[in-house]
Image (cartoon, rainbow, N blue to C red; front, side, top):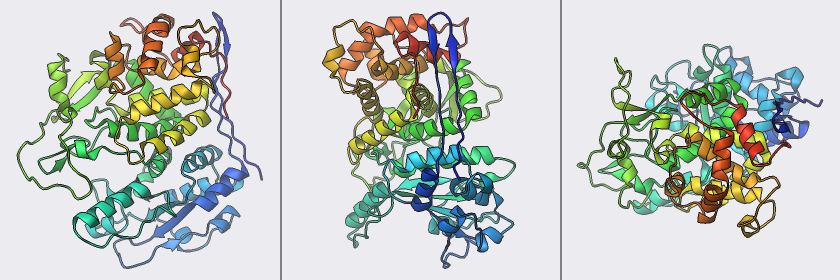
Length: 490
């Protein structure tokens, strides 16, 4: 049976003409069959018994509409059951065509199987169980969804084994792209939609082999990847831009499947809401021990993000009472663009709107290209992805062919940079400011082309001012200003 669900968005602007902005999500039996062959579900009913072997679900039977075994007979894991049905079932058996469409295309980035551990965490897990099943504690002993890429995990295991003079373990990435672990509790209290979009978010992590630049964020025996507290809010500016990239691309796909979250996060930006920044200073004293998984270098200045913001004259927002006393608050569009880009949802909004207007296939192909570029290479992942998206917009032409000329045709190669300018609130006051969004590592020719030839046109078409709140339609108007009048979703 063919399951087809199509989601379309269109906008008509009489001033210039018609631009169809569509995000089409249409699963086919081929997508469902692909997921049947690439997702390996392992169910653990009593995870605190760490000596047991998981139940491997029969994907072929589920695909055919048959549900049998301990997983399906349990009354405690309806959320996990619903997730598996939505990924492998047809429309008559709980299949979700939109979810299947996106999940299949994400897994095709590396085109290798993904292991998905399903835990009955209705009883809190012990630390040993968390470790055994590669689960992430939500703070209450439950398994919040988390995932890893197998290649980067294998590299870390190899590095540690060699540093400790231990036998190097066998690699697993020849077979697996990555793995994910999630429990039933995340589906509680009617959180099905949130849990589903979290699954998509984590699925992207299984495909992401970008270098975490961990060697730049280790100080006094601690990692400052996410800051002093080791965790992050969705509206936080985190120290490590590699983390911003990794969370940003995962949230890009989350926004594509979760329209409610997309509206909320756009509203957060449009209303000039606050960005959180940790105030707790990093410790400069403590253990000098080096982590086994990387070679530590001089720390990045971004470890002291709050200090840098203060030095730049950024004005804090005072909250009383302060719900998070370890954090400072800054309005999004009151801080320099190089700090705005440290937030994962600024990136996610930029890329998801690119995907809605130019096609999810274009974005995922760029992500696939970027992944190969970033594997075991420490560089700016954000700059590399913008380079890739801009080059893709040339559609086979050379960059030199659009420099120093009046291009009257569509300019999709400028849309990534125009959206980056928009979602940093046009806070770049100079070409150097704009280049700083990309850590100064974006090809300078792209910076020159946008800043000298198209920046004024974009900002005039869609101004951002205190008296006007940005709207979703602004992204369409920007595309139209750049001559892109029709989207052709794949």
